[in-house]
Image (cartoon, rainbow over all chains, first blue to last red):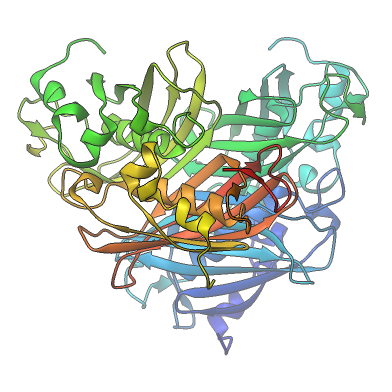
Length: 148
Length: 148
Length: 148
Length: 148
């Protein structure tokens, strides 16, 4: 969990289109079996009560848990997976600051893998935890992956 | 599942701040134990592969399942709940058009309730299904709810 | 959901070894995409409070949801799947009588399928609902399946 | 995670009635926020393929996760909780030997708590992981609990 390489930088959510840009996450680290992303909360991440929306927590867990099983060390290449199921347990709330999401691959073979992870606020309080099952897309089974 | 009242109109996501506005849903209907919302997919709802991001599906299920257990018939008032756990099974993909999310309360007492629901694309294909457990917030136990 | 054939009769839990015998379920019906089993509750199905143990509910949902995606119309043959993930929401309790578990396949391709289902007591009250994701075992992709 | 006291001994599944006796677990340890149980697999824990039935894994996770949030240090007394939701991700298989189930309380207040946990075989391989949300029963909010 040390160096960030180019591939990691490229895939920080802020530089990506679509829903990734909405979430606006930074890639803290990404290594074999472990991925960490962080988000500085903005008003558009909050719900009507002014705290982080549960959907932001599930979305970020989905991303970090998928990343944990699809590390690709080669710049300009990536590995892809689709989520089969995702479960989230909500354990806390926060209304601002930087939250950190950690995903860890827990098991898996060539095509299916399982991850778990958690979201913590800036003080380290647990906001949510989750588990997911993923299917590796064709072409993404080996570390070489496919072009970005 | 018939009339839309003022409370329903007020709470369509497009007119709300924060993450609700990002999701941009319309309130199709909202009655005792059943809520329906819809979203016309925009580029910011998609993932890197150009299909709806899993986090959009989980977020919309969270909202419709919570609504199913917090119907409030009085304009200008609402009932609030927090999500304890949410699980989503992903069953399909789509890249555009209007998707519809239905939440149904399945059981529950004064403080805790359970809902299930599904997301379908414009052709009726199942995109995701989910289950959630919710806790009613203080003051929201009765149909009168609290001021918006 | 009509006729019971020999394959169905053979696979009622009472006639099977191992944990299936412990659960002691009857096969009410088993057709393409839908399976129904029932259990007459015995003291060994209960918890310390004298009501059905949560583990009995999850176990029965696991079986009915897997069956829903592995119907095999040929006597003496069967199709096999393994559970990737299972979630259960507990909505009620009961201490005796016959409970009925229904599993329905909701989506899926050749190798992965998704089911949802529910457990009801003799009066029709909802005791639990659940969702599962399953992987079809090699040789079980087609309706012909493999020898029992 | 050190001493076993009388309350712990009393509640090992082998000495309990009902479904607890079927599961036949030993209480390895039980302390504030962490519980560990183990089972020496018997033929009645297996499925038709001769490996541990998924329902055994979900049942044991249900017990260990509930215990993690209901530790009671007073002999002859206990604290009770009911499971609201439980999710299990299945990651491995085994056909015999002693399996160990660890439950850890992750968050929670007076009435609701959340746990996660895992099941490992005798070689330490991960068989399953899970998350649960529980409601503490009336009278069980404080460490004193209620009489067994």
